[in-house]
Length: 169
Image (cartoon, rainbow, N blue to C red; front, side):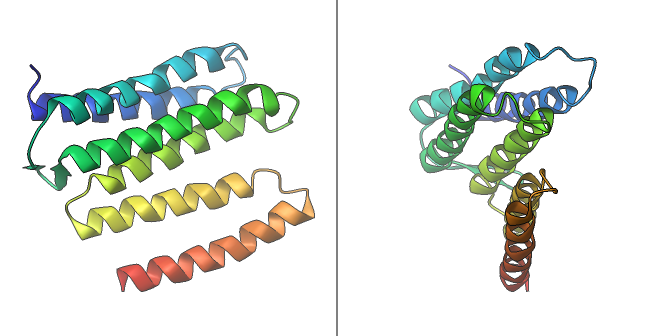
């Protein structure tokens, strides 16, 4: 049986690998079929979260993180939703000029959100949630030439900033 420290470490390493994989997809030399490998990489954090949910009992504090069944459930749920959205977007957004920019942002949003749900420290939670909101705003602003997404990104960024500052302050 895996210890909670090892399992959490594997979960964080899988998140880092997924983020690096998303960033690698930005490189123009990376073939478009790499997105399938990226989706397989996204499954790793979900699997570790499911193992943590069923295998780890009780509450454990590991640095600034609280590891219990609820945090594993929420982190796994967020990462599973991220996988489903990216799997759908793989075909849906295929003709888009900014196709490569969506996937690193999707991955960052779900990674930061899952870490926010596992946080024991309010400062870390605020930082992770702020990064989630920043990536969400950047995702809305990927296609800057369309007026509606650009205006939506402006409005959302102001709303997110006010809410985040109220949360932090």
